[in-house]
Image 1: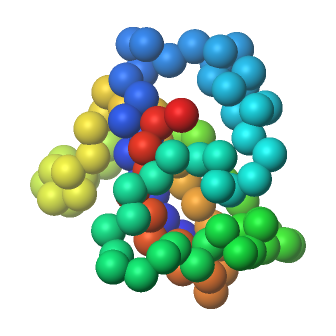
Image 2: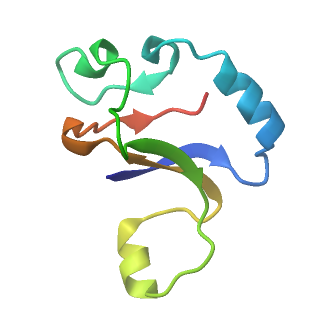
Image 3: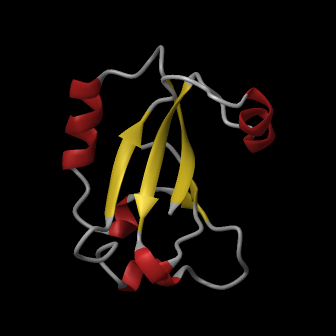
Length: 98
């Protein structure tokens, strides 16, 4: 599983506009990303994040139970987050907001 900051400020987030933009994605190549690796990203060949219990969902931080542990993650509470469970595919992308 991976948790990614989307770069989308929660104060500017409007679900209806976000859903409209997501509906225009027809392939993974349509998602702007920064590839931190020297080689071409292999995920464009997969087309899905897998089946069964694999998912990608948008989340926010509702509460923090352990402030020290949370601080070490360097997560901005004011950003929309994306939680991805992709099994063994192990995607490691830096997500750029769409």
